Image (cartoon, rainbow, N blue to C red):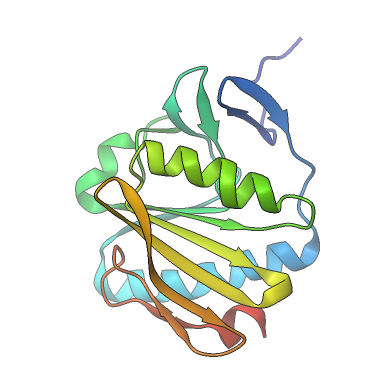
Length: 170
């Protein structure tokens, strides 16, 4: 029998409970790739850090909170957390909210990311064609940037990055 540590799977540990998620739909993956493309082009020009795509475990606290955000970014100065998995707090995490997972991605995971003070949290809601970027201020998330249907969002953590939402959902 294999263990979670050896399997490449979609199991997360959320507040001490193992939760297995289904694989995402094609539209979800297309959105992940569109965001990835935009961020990677920016990072190639500015060499600010590294971007990673799920599944890759982020271990905030062994056996308590081990999540797999859809995307995560680590600044160059923070690359020490990149080991076998990510062991520590990434600088940005992004969740593309799948149907039926709204509460898990926008409330449960948000609370965990806030608890460990992830500096920037992107919430992408395909059905609304919306991107909301939250940043930590005084240990709480505050809206930094938001766009729905049209407009651009800006990152505070990935310096100089702006993305038109039409490039994400188009």
